[in-house]
Length: 106
Image (tube, helix red, strand yellow):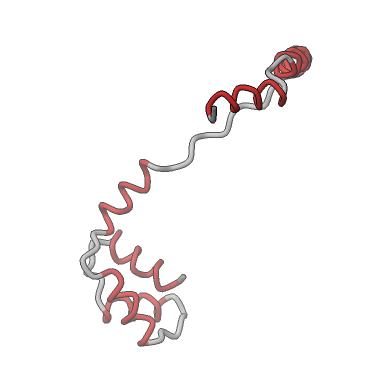
């Protein structure tokens, strides 16, 4: 993960993401860089514009969580749930649904 962070740091600083730069960032952070991992990351980032990818990622961020209901909302909400359950119970029974399906198949 530190390899990816190093690449993001270089991108944020406007520096080229290359083997020398990434190795330097990792060494400065106290990580002993593995040459194979550095090369693998650089190969996977080849042709990728991180600035564009990060901009797109910001537009797909998760929505803010809904506010918690207050005490008065909780009291009103219980009555609404009971009404919804009653409405669902008035739906079509399984037998009626099966009869409707038989019309489809002759």
